[in-house]
Amino acid sequence: MGTTLRSYRCHYHPKDQQGVPQPCESGALPSIRVQARNGNEAELIAAATVHGVVASVERVEGDEVAA
Image 1 (cartoon, rainbow, N blue to C red):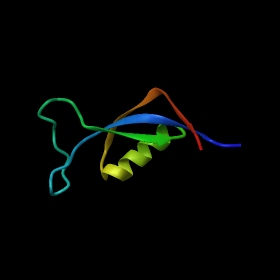
Image 2 (image 1 turned 90 degrees about the vertical axis):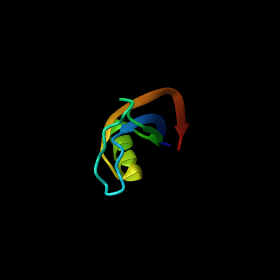
Image 3 (image 1 turned 120 degrees about the vertical axis):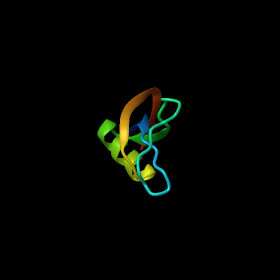
Image 4 (image 1 turned 180 degrees about the horizontal axis):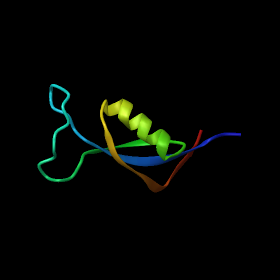
């Protein structure tokens, strides 16, 4: 029995060279896409990947992968 992974888009606050979160000039936060079992796991994966604070997580419909 496998676990279904879903695709999530995670928006995060970018950091400067010293690691301080910076406002986005365009008003749109950058995002990454991750595969996870749920939104909480997606947030943890994204935060570890970008080494920063995740602002929002949204599931991308239609992208399911059996693991």
